[in-house]
Image (cartoon, rainbow, N blue to C red; front, side, top):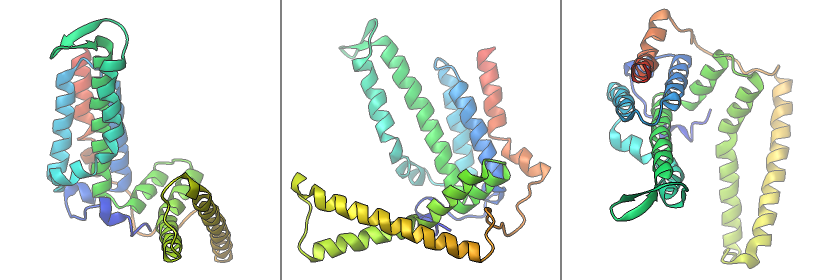
Length: 252
């Protein structure tokens, strides 16, 4: 499932991180992010320690820095917002390189930038070492609501199908001389979007009926043994455990 999206973010390997069951990695990543979010923004050294922990995970997993950085582009809107906060923030101003910046805006921008960066990097490493389908299976094994997991599984599976349908519709429009250049072409694009929605809905109905005829009861079968041993849980705890120790040391 989701084979068309796997290679873009998933990096195949046989490291200790790759071999961990998905539920262990998912729980470790979630625990680590919770610790990062709970860290006071004034603890600069703590964020440096968290980054070092993630760098260690990347080194063990064999994930190059360039691979991770390219896939962190999703963070750009957060970076732009964080950079703008010192300029638009209110309250006392401080002089930085000849600019009068909001002191509270500087703290808020740093807080967003540091925590968002660590959170996105954690997600990138999780996705790089775990196939998308395994992540969803791990969520199911962690007792996340079954309907949400099933919806995510179907979304992942049919994202390529919908994208392919969009490409074919675009090629059909362009083969007839249509090119969207300005607002006058919005109605044509809107009709295409409506047609895509109808086709997707009807396809979903057919797939659902086909699944019911094959015995679908609301859950997808899990092939293979994905049970986790105590040792594997302990290995996964090597990320959130030290992070929690750093947080406690910084707060106390």
